[in-house]
Structures are given as structure tokens and as C-alpha cells.
Amino acid sequence: MQTPTSRPGSLQMVQKSSSSTPRVVRKLKVTGSDSDSPSPVSKMTKDNKSSKVIDRRSPRNLITEKKKPITRVSELESQLSHLQDELQKTKDQLTSSESLKRKAELEADEAKRHLAATSAELQETRIQLDEISESEDSRLQELRKLSHDRDRAWQSELEAVQKQHELQSAALSSAINEIQKLKAQLERAREDSTRAEAELEESRDRVRSLEGKKSVVEKTGGADEELLESLRTEVQNLQAELEAAERSYRDEYIQSTLEIRNAYELVERAKSESNYKVAELKSMLDESKTDIQELTEREIELELNSETLESTLRDLTSKLYEKSLEIERMAKENELLKSEMEKKEVERRKIEHEGLIKLSALTEEASKSGKRAERAAEQLDATQVSHSELEAELRRLKVQSDQWRKAAEVATAMLSVNGKRVDYRVIGGKLGSENGGGDTDDDECGADEESGKKRNGNNVLRKIGELLKKGQK
Image (tube, rainbow, N blue to C red; front, side):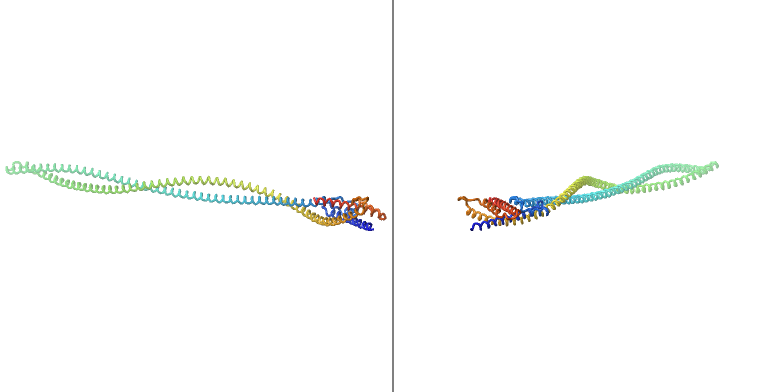
């Protein structure tokens, strides 16, 4: 009497478990992905037909469906990290290009400052060189002018002295000639005086002779008066000539004496003047020699200074040439730096453009990935919820399966045919068939629903068994 009472209880348990299984399946089906979720109309039809449709999804498919969003999220996270790395690399490239640009600009500014300083130094050197050359040229011109002026002055003075010396020499020679003439005149005067003296003596002798003759005539008593008168006249004439000769002799003597004295005075004056002029010319000549020596030394010093200036000028010219070469080199380097800066600017703009494109693409991809991640997170949350519900349902089904197993063992122990054990699945089928046969009074729809629930319960039990086996493995 206990067996019939236990059978309906076991059958009722199986029916409860089979009736509860489609609800879990329907929950799992609703909490799936967005692509698998049906529209509300189809959902209502599926809810209405859920009692008649057998859900053939296995627990493996549920686990793989649960793993898919996780792998998708990890892929999206890896893509997002990769995109972030690329974005960081692009930012690093941009910062490096900016630093290179700033460095190139600083180098260009430094080169410009160095070039400006070198140009200023070169300009200052040129100005100093021009000033030095102009001052030295002006000094040389002034010294040359002074030298030429002094040379001309000394030359004119020397020529004047020479002319004066020549004039004095001519005057001296003329004075000497005059002295010679005076000497000749003196000699002639002396000769004339001697001749006059001789004539005077002769006249005196004649006078004496005539006086003697007169005395003789007087003594003889003078026979002839005419002869006496002639003698008297002749004596008077001779006396007059004698007196005239004496006067002319005295006058000529006095004149010659005066001329000789004047000539001697003129000669002495000419000698003193010539000696003074010679001494003055000697002093001027000595001064000219000292001035010429000083000018020669000054000229030598100026030549040395000019040589020094020429060497300095050559050095400055070589430095100027070197500076010009350096300026050309720096200009070329500046051009190269400018071209490199332009290239780097083009590359930087290109990198910025590419970086902006990549950044926009990465931003778009990141936004898409974020949306995908949000959807995946939502799916993951839904999957986790369904997973927790599935675990609770599995625990409940496990408890129910344990109860079924115990009930099957009891039924197997109770229902044995000729000492053989009957499989609990066959018993379950028999129980199901008996239960179906006992409920013939129910309507056809209820029978179909019960049979669907039983089959669904068996399928769920089979799937749970497979999951348990896989879990044990």
C-alpha cells in the first residue's frame, strides 16, 4: 500500500522539476546577446509556445556564449591599450619633433647671434682698420708735406745762401779786381810820381843851371837882354810846371792813398762778411744735416711703421678673409639649418597630420570600443546574472536529481521483474506513461504540455549530467 502512495509523489516531483526547467531556459534565452534577443511579438509567441518547444541548447553552448563576451572585452581592452600605446607613441613623436624644432630654432638663433656678433666685430675691425689707415695716411701725408716743405724751405734758403755767397764771391772778386786795379793805378801813380820827381829834379836841375847861367851872365854883365828875358820866362814857366807837377803829385798821392785805404777797408769788410756768412752757412748746413738726419730717421721709423701697418693690414685682411669664409660657412650652415628646420617642420606637420588622423581614428575606434565594451559589460553583467541564476538552478536541479536518483533506486528496489533490476530511465518512462494513461480525463492540450515538460525535464537532466561529467573531468 505504500508503493502507490510513493509513486505519485515521485511523479509529482518529476513533473515539478520538468515544469520548472523551461522557465530557466526561457530566462537564459531572454538574457542572451542583443543579436539573439527577439522582438516583443516573437517573444510573446515564444512565451506562448514555450510549453510545446523543446530547448535544445546545451550547457556547453551557454558557457561558450558566456566566454565570448569576456574574450571580446579582453580583445577590446587589448585593442584599446594598443591604441593608447600608439597614441602615446604619436604624442612622444610629436613632443620629440617639437623638442627637435625648438632645438633647431635655438641653434638657428644661436647661429644668428654668433653671425651678428661676428659681423659686428668684423665691421668694427673694418672701421678701426679704416680709421688707422686714414690716420696713418694723414700722418704720412702731413709728414711728407712737412718734409717737402722743410726741404723746399731749406733748399730755397740754401739757394739764397748760395746766391748770396756767389754775390759775395762776385763782390769779393770785384773788390779784389778793384784792389788790383788800384794797385796798378798806385803803381802807375808811383811811376808817375817818380817820373814827375825825375822831371822835377830835371826841372830843378835846369833851374839851377839857368840860375847858374844867370849868375854867370850877371857876373859877365849880361850882354844880351833878350836872352835874359827868355831865360826868365822859361824859368817862370818851369817853376809853374814844377808847382803844377807837385800839386798833381800830391793830389794823386792823396787820392791813391785814399783809394788804397778804401780798398783795404772794403777787402777787410768783405772778408769779415764772407767769414760771417761762411760761419752762418756752416751752422745752417750743420742744422740742415741734423734735420736731414732726423728726417731720415723719421722716414726710417715711418717706413718701419708703414711696414708694421702693412703687416697688420695683411693680418687683418687675412682675418677678414677668414671671417668672410666663416660667415659664408655659417651662412651655409644657417641655410642648411633652415632647410633642415623646414624639412623637420614638414615632417612635424606630416606627423601631426598623421597623428591627428590616427588620433581621430583612435578616438573613433576608442569610442566604438567603449561602446562595444559597454555593450559587452552589459552582456557580461547579464551573463553573470544568468550564470548565477543558472548555478542556483543547477544546485536546485542537483538536489532534485539526487531526490530522483533516490526515488529511482527505491522504485528499482520495489519494482523488479523475475529478480532483475529495471533501469530507472525505463521506470521513469513507464511512470510517465502510467501517469499519462491515468490522466486520460484531462484535455489534449494538458497532456501535450505534460509530455513536453517530461521530455524537457529529461533533456535538462541529460545536459546537467553531461555538465557534471565535464566538470569532474
